Image (cartoon, rainbow, N blue to C red; front, side, top):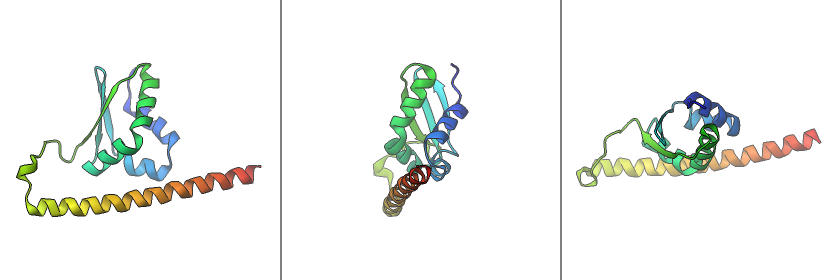
Length: 129
């Protein structure tokens, strides 16, 4: 089967909630080069979130589509060049702390969303019974 990022996105859309899809995948793009799929996330935070929460799902979806395992690399399009840690200024470190705090808040919000989705599914199952 030929690789199509749109097909991957459709399978992702079918497996996760709409808010999660809209937040983490809607603005992504991807490409296959040899045995490596590169996923382009909007920013470093989205890259980290996708790697930490969705990499296994992505691996399975893409492996099923291509009928073979591939390496998955998630990169940020907002900062494609590598930054040397020694070159960061105090202001950058402060910005990093702010982003890290926002990351923690977003993770807590995602946990709440996941819990609410579990509750909704349980209620839907009760209604269907």
